[in-house]
Image 1 (cartoon, rainbow, N blue to C red):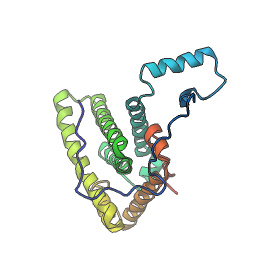
Image 2: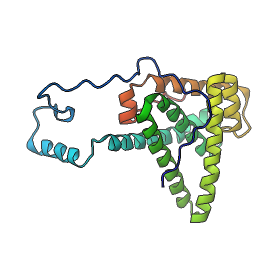
Image 3: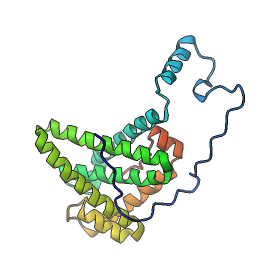
Image 4: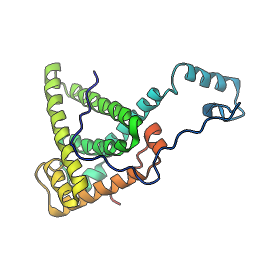
Length: 231
C-alpha cells in the first residue's frame, strides 16, 4: 500500500543548488545509437541482454527511479547504523535513536529532492514507501504481531512528520533553531550545547554535500556522497 508523502510544513521549497538546473534533453542525431548501446564493440550476448532489458522496461523512468530510491534508502540506513556517527554524537544505542537517525537522513534526501521537479516527487514517494516497508520488516523481525505493527508504524509516522517539520523550520531559521529541533527529536531532550552544535553543523554540511551532487547521479543512481562523520 502506498502511503501519502505529506508536506511537512508550509515553508517555501529549497532553491535549486547552483549548477543543477535540468536542461532539456538534446535530441539524438539521425542514426545515433541509444545511450545504452553506445559502447562498442559488444558481443551478441551482451547486445541481446540489453535489448531484453529495454523490452522488459528495466530502463524505463519508473524502474530507474525505483532502483534509485532503494539505493538512497540503503545509503540512509548505512549512515544511520554508523557507529562512528552515533558514537561521535554520544547517542544512545537503541531502536528509537536509530529510527531518529535514519529519519534525519531520509529528511535530508527528501529536502534535496524538492529541487528535482516531477522526478524528485516520484522518487520521494518511492523512497518514502520503502522507508516504511523496511520499518515494518524490522518490527516483524522483533516478533511483533500485525496489529502491534500497525499501531507502532502509525506512531513512528507521527514522530517522523514532527521531526521533519522541525528540521524544515531549522533549515531556514539558522543553527540555533536546528539545534533545538535535534535536541527535541534526535537527542530525545538530552545532550550538551557542544553536542547540539556539532550535530547542527553536521546537518548543514551534509545538506551542502547533497546539494553539490550532480542531479543525474543523485536522481537516477541514488548517490549521496555522505561526508565522513568525523570530518
